[in-house]
Image 1 (tube, rainbow, N blue to C red):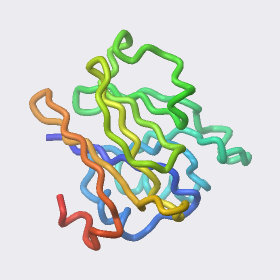
Image 2 (image 1 turned 135 degrees about the vertical axis):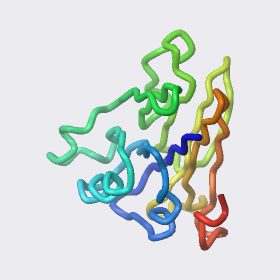
Image 3 (image 1 turned 90 degrees about the vertical axis):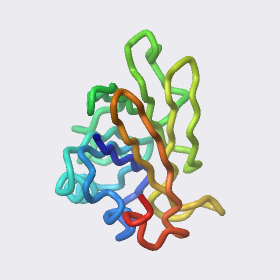
Image 4 (image 1 turned 30 degrees about the horizontal axis):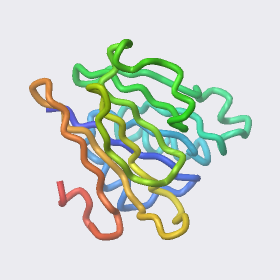
Length: 161
């Protein structure tokens, strides 16, 4: 079994509940609007990290962060970008099983043409009345089980797994 943590739109805020949820992950993917290099450092201390730049990540530190990235974890390919409308590949044709995005702060899981699209929502500062959320993929025996967790309704998000 491989556990992949999914986080986005931290905007410089790493909540203790998010860090707790991500402990034990085999890999973490951040979908952009990171907010600062300290966020990347703290996530990379938990597990190997793949991160993409969001539309708000324009300071000099973000120059080294790609706009899109593809990573293979647990036998699956994940393509990460911040804004879904900027998708520049045909994921199914490229052999991608999961597309991770952020930007909207709206958690969503949807399957299209055999590809799983997931936006874990925002784990950072609240935006409007949207939930504070985070996600994960459990990969086992070739199957992918996605999950989004509302960090406010799950005080011990890790125990909720």
